[in-house]
Amino acid sequence: MKLNKLPLEFQKARIILEKIRNAGFEAYFVGGGVRDTLLGLPLHDVDIATSAYPAEIKRIFRKTVDTGIAHGTVTILDHGEGYEVTTFRTESTYQDYRRPDSVQFVRSLKDDLKRRDLTINALALSLDGEVIDLFGGLEDLKNGLIKAVGNPNERYHEDALRMMRTVRFASQLDFEIEEATLNAVAENAHLLEKIAVERINVEWTKLLLGKNPKKGIAGFLETKLFVYCPLFNTMEQVLKTMLSLAQLHFKNDVAAWTLVCYLALDDDHKQISRLLKSWKCSNELIVDVQSSFSALNLFRANQISAWNLYTIGLPAFETAASVASMLGFSRDIAVIQSRYEALPIKNKKELAINGGNLIKDLQFTPGSFLGKTLAIIEKKVVCGELRNELGSLEAAAVKIKNN
Ligand code: ATP
Ligand code: MG
Image (tube, rainbow, N blue to C red; front, side, top):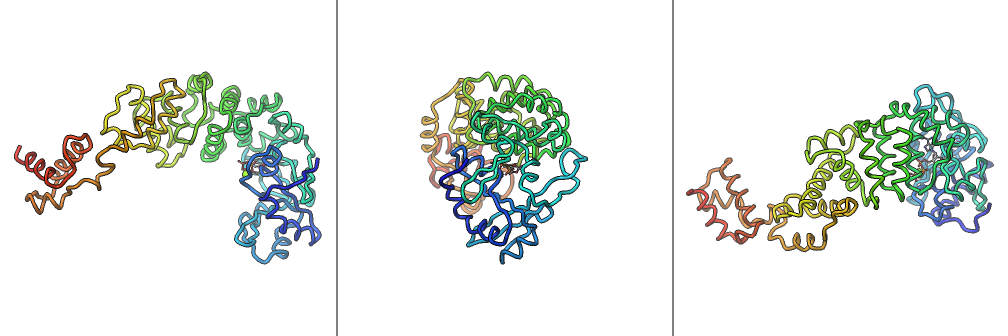
């Protein structure tokens, strides 16, 4: 198969491939970029594979960075762009189910493509648009099939992360998983325990955010991969519930985790934090999921006060609204947005009074009583019980002090 036109991202890298070729070596575009080009999707990676060894690449190009030299990856800097060029390689035996014991640089494209995970990820594209398809990847792309390169059992045994990638791509591309491939995932699922949680998390998140998350979740469930994920061994019912929802589509990771937590846990910040920490999620994500979960419960109860809007914040309600609609209790987010916009203040800094005013004008002493007074005033302002101007707030403070 031959493409008439390369996407712009590849055209920009043309000079790199030409230089490598002019020096007497082979060079191709490989990996996700080729797959996505053939699917008509936007590209987010330009990966180049070459028969030149790293030292040879460094002789051809003046500006390079050794970004992954042990695996044969050198980044070539060209007019402010960086291009990752990786020497064709094979991988030796895998003793720990996750890393090859060593990599071997080779001159043959075929050997390089053979070590890749899925047929649709094992295509190469030459500068003149020729697609090199040695493992039936084009046919699988056409048929929407996720299939391991070579013997699936061996491939998952070599690197257990590939099992998560398999279910992730089913979701991301809305593809079916080929039968022998799916069976091999089921057979080797327990090896996922050997994989670092951070790497599992990356794939799980991409799965949730994919085009058809139900397809990925179905594979994740059916093969029992979930059993080997942190604190997920009791999640069977949660995953089944997710599959049963009429609509399942997430705008971001906060929304996805909010739904998972909502189905699995109580609205308890500690429980949420424990689950997400076990998945090595960032603290920022944990806080955002906690807020969205609270907002979601308020949506369900249909009792959202100005104070709730102020303390939880609009983004959490927007995320929660998207999750609420999947759960079938959607509420009008436009109403929430306009109520939020109408809040007298959006944060404490906008309060017309501060500790300094209380000390200077009203002879408060620094300490916890002053803090409490400010907190009472803040809440009253947010709830519209006090006007946000110094005079009325000082009068309120005096009242609190004399009480
Ligand atoms: P994405 O769109 O998420 O970047 P990708 O297919 O480009 O998807 P990368 O992780 O960027 O995924 O990897 C680039 C290529 O390297 C893949 O297309 C595949 O050929 C190969 N690859 C990546 N991870 C593995 C793995 N664990 N085992 C075998 N081959 C892999
Ligand atoms: Mg990629």
